[in-house]
Image 1 (cartoon, rainbow, N blue to C red):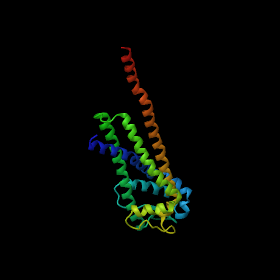
Image 2 (cartoon, helix red, strand yellow):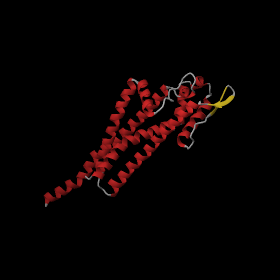
Image 3 (cartoon, rainbow, N blue to C red):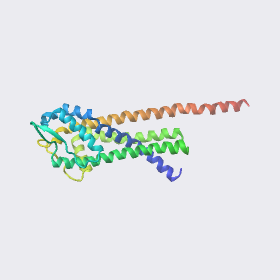
Image 4 (tube, rainbow, N blue to C red):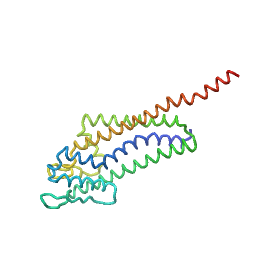
Length: 243
């Protein structure tokens, strides 16, 4: 196994958990229904003074903002009969930072998928330097690494989500704009900490289910593929013995 092949295999293994996690983060961040349910579960209308229809439209605008080229999020809503900006300048600046983070997650999702497809297409289907059995084994390795990391993070989050959430912000952002006031800032009123805890569980749960699906397919191929691949060898051995 040459150096390039080793690097390609390592890239494939690493890309599996990265793809699964980033794909689910992207799904959750773009799911308007999840936002709407969170608004109703945590009474965002009462906390913000904004009606649910306006909050729902704000969620859709936020989802578009993550994907489009706008530099600032300028969402208008009606409060006490007056049309006004939903977010303050500080909140808008923080959302600019969040958009940068989300765009990085989206690109990481796309790059990891490209690596996975390129490895399968190049090493398995084109050059045949790797067999489908090896691909299944490497997939198990990638899932194992991902589940170990997710399990460690999940255990930390369950035992102390507050501190984990704070630590995440300290690492992800280079400023303190994320320190919002729940009494005045609509952003944190719309998305209180329990909302993010729910999203964390959603992303983690989806990732585990998908990882188990990969494990099931890989193990099934390793078990039943072995029996199928061994059949010709057994037949040839018997034929040789008869001769």
